[in-house]
Image (cartoon, rainbow, N blue to C red; front, side, top):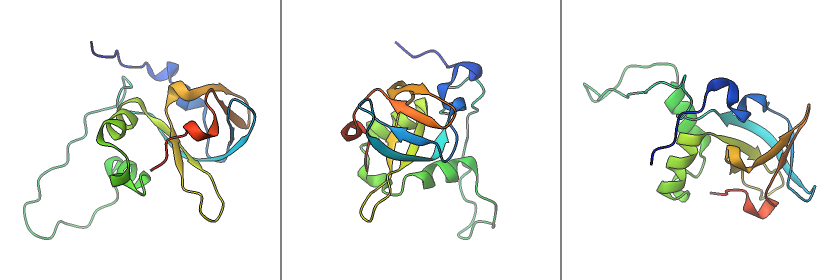
Length: 132
């Protein structure tokens, strides 16, 4: 059974902003929002096609939305294919976890419990954040 597209106005990710502080369900600090992607499941999301190159040197161009989304995954190959596809379909919040060795993490929309003016509270603990 295929999921129904999320209506734009129902997408919880629209209420998330860069810089918001993220806490897990126990109130432990997880990090801060560095970016978010609404997902391909939104009604407004279009089908993005990347044309096949016609010569060995593609023309210079500005970064496309696809380039930006793919660039969001710093260790893209470290994330299992099924999970990458789910993040791309459902959308995600990328969390800067800071620290010297802290890598970014990702959460799906359904892992968000509440959003207030300046913070995101998750319904999972900080160990449940998706890490590459």
